[in-house]
Amino acid sequence: MNIIRVRNPLAIDLMQKYLGIDSDHTPEQTADILKAALSENPRNTFIIQAWNMDIKGEEELLGFIIAYTTNYQKHVFVYQAMAIKSDGEGHKNMNRMFARLILWAESIGKSELRAEILLDETKSNFIKKWGFKEKAKIVTYDIESGFDIAVIKEEKKEEKKEEKKEEKGDSDGRGNRPADNKQSGQTTEES
Image 1: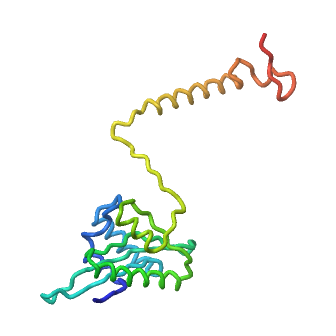
Image 2: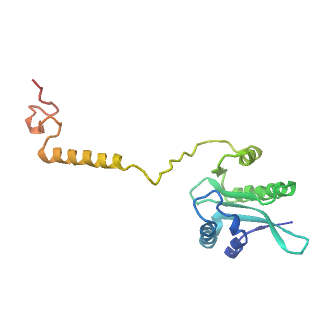
Image 3: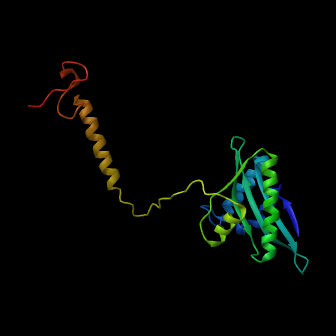
């Protein structure tokens, strides 16, 4: 088994079909993003792969980790970690790759790893095994295709009403203009 740090963007093609499984991007889009990151900012991009020779003498991908950071963050974000074979050997490979990720993060002065994880049993085990702690929750709102725009239309009506009031000088909504007040800050009393 060989573990290699990917530095050549073309090596991304060998793992493309596994990319972006939980993301908003297709595997092809994710591959393009990773290739650009490796080309433009290799210092802050960490991609590691585990390979093995199968019985036919062909290399097979056993797993990988993709992580990145910026110069201004104290953390490294783990984008995707995958053991392709879920047998005991796959977990050993993931352990070895994860240890290298930690060493890399420390070597560039980072003090924390972060990850966004869709919760299921396998991923929950990953969190527990490596000691990740929940610090925040990510919440989502799914915009349905039939979203009722009545709310937006109502907001626009209210905005137009406000604009008309301002044009008329009706600042307090009761027909009183600021000049009608005897002292600054006073409003006219209603009878």
